[in-house]
Length: 391
Ligand code: ADP
Image (cartoon, rainbow, N blue to C red; front, side):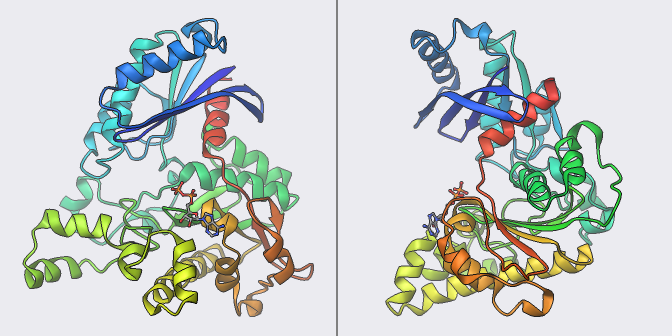
């Protein structure tokens, strides 16, 4: 099956074309466009390029297109990308302004350019469909809840991949099978002890998710991707009382407050140096206290959420690091795991130091909790889910 995974930003279009067979997928072509103003033009150009290069015989050779949609109003899951998906994206444009209009436009255009292909949307919120009402609900008035204000959770594609791979690495094929088929069959009972995983997706955007028997039970991200851990330049968790106070005290508008919280906060706002953790380590090593505070705040927040989800899971079997910082951040992983031996979490310093962007077990042989590094590959995750949906 030839599956094109479309990654649409507010001014960018990237794609990878996969040849998929069961779990395995091979990228047979990829491309990227920046400063996009007209999706029709670049999508048609990409299809023409694939044909000219002999990758496809014609547009009809592409069986399906997958979209990693972020957040839909009253809609989630891994679903056929039809008008209902476009309406759901349009309904939450205000919450995900950089992504929802781009995906709505992209889906419309692919429907025109590839009329024979199946279009599939995998919402980033999909993995959280089965969290309890208590964990998904904010204590706001009913009128707020009626317009969709609740905890959704994000990075669902990445965390679901961790649910599958962590189960395999823990020798729990029964749980891995449930996780793989989750969007087809929903949560399924598992014989034997529960498998409890905390997955830390730490990248430009970061979140921590608790997973029991392949199913998410909660996440650090809530209503929007602005919540949870401090992000590269987004605030993360913030007391709602701080916003009206800052607006009144600093004399700034709501739009300006939103801009500062989404563009000038997080690691960048804390450090005043950079939104890239590598720069923060360099600045901290040179004695910059603000860079050190940014790093310490990130570690504190990861531990805070890991601890909360660990408790909620009733124990922990695996702690997983993924995405750019999780895969490469040796010092950060060590800081997150420091002094957790009373909870059965024993990091092996040498294994941790040796692990850069590869899959590895980085806990000691005696550690009750397996500490794992699992590289993220969100395009492949998407291609797999599209393949499963259509097979
Ligand atoms: P995005 O969310 O943008 O897809 P990535 O998952 O690619 O992000 O992660 C980007 C982050 O990974 C950056 O903040 C960068 O600092 C971090 N990173 C990349 N390489 C390293 C490294 N060698 N050590 C520590 N962090 C790294």
